[in-house]
Image (cartoon, rainbow, N blue to C red; front, top):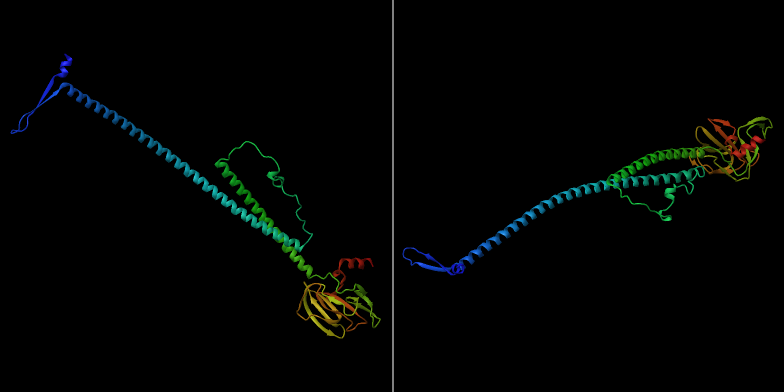
Length: 336
């Protein structure tokens, strides 16, 4: 009976407008049922696909939101890292500048040390070899290294940079103080060298034979007691006569008592006088250095033979030349 129901037909009447003819359409119930089932199946399929599509869209949206959150977090982390790298770069740059300044100061100090050695060789002890700290004297390649690795954190890196900068600052201050002391020592040595250059302390000629010392004696011409204001040094005619210290020629001339003679002005009212020269090689106003030849030994003026009368004047008054002679000569004078 059910089967008969499926075989029965349904008639659909289509009535057009007033002048049209009526259309009758007969369809089996089974065809209509199949059509309805297909439509329901299609609708269900569309609904399922729509639900799945909506679920997929929602999932994609959620993942997109999550990815945006992660991206924002990564961007923040990247910004912090970039800022940290920039700070580290600035710290390293500052340290490199400090290192360059320290190196420059070290080079100036090395040049200054060389100048001091030239000014006073042997008076300043050179740094002994092997004076470096053990930590820097031993190379890393000379032995083994090991231990567990603990990567430095950002905070530790900044602390290290700050500590290094503090050490550099301390080193710069110490080097500046040392450079100041070395500079002062250099100036003192230069002043001492200049004083030594302008202080009589050498023999005025080649010979060291003193024929008449400073003080009272019998005059070689009158044989009467007289005061000798210098020392007479015998020598060969034409021997060089030297300036015993640096200075400026105060006078250079000739008279019948002193013969050819030269007076040199030194520091602090000190003058030296060289008499009975065979000839003078300098003129008034000429600068002279210690040991420079200023004339030749002779016997001009009031003289009994070739010799040099060497006289020292302090503030215009004659004084004993012995304290202004080399130390070995002073010892000989004390031993007489």
